[in-house]
Image (cartoon, rainbow, N blue to C red; front, top):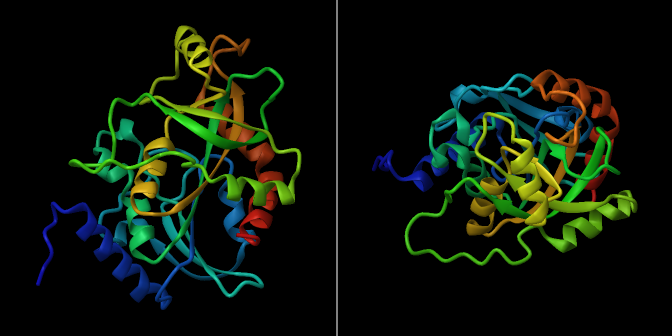
Length: 270
């Protein structure tokens, strides 16, 4: 029987079945969403079993952001016997495709057997002691998108959404990793200085346009979440210069080899 295309879980199952057939890997253990600056980690995890164009997989679309790749990759993680699903095709809320599209990768990962999700991003920093190139563990978030990926009367507990256990594993690799609260805005415009001050007063340390909605969908699916941000620039009002996406890409490229090695070492311990 053909499952309804208006059921997001059905589309996720169809995508997972396609991935299993295309990769020959029946079940993946860990999924990674690699944001700006983090893409090099996929090459360090282990042997790539297969790479699939995202447009071949049900529910996925080409990336709309420069610096993101449009592929899904299956990787056999060195020394663990586990398989990682690297989701290079991230959809952002500001693309206008709806929140279901934003979290489709997460739901596909869950349908593919994944139990641990690693979410990464490039973001603006609200602390002057965190210069561009600083990786920060996400301890919590503020969702300022005015939406949720959860549909219906499904009341999901978000306590310890970003697992303390996984942050402790990351600190086994780098004990000096700081943590902070990530604030997701809708975008695609950058935040105003007033909005940055608001985020600070609400308890935020990092600002960006991804991650929080994906993390919520992951918790709904029963996944354990590790979130890591790369500070690519001081946020508006903190930065002495106007913000630009070129600056984000440049900072990501400069920090790429170091943070990719960090992430690969962390994943090997998960």
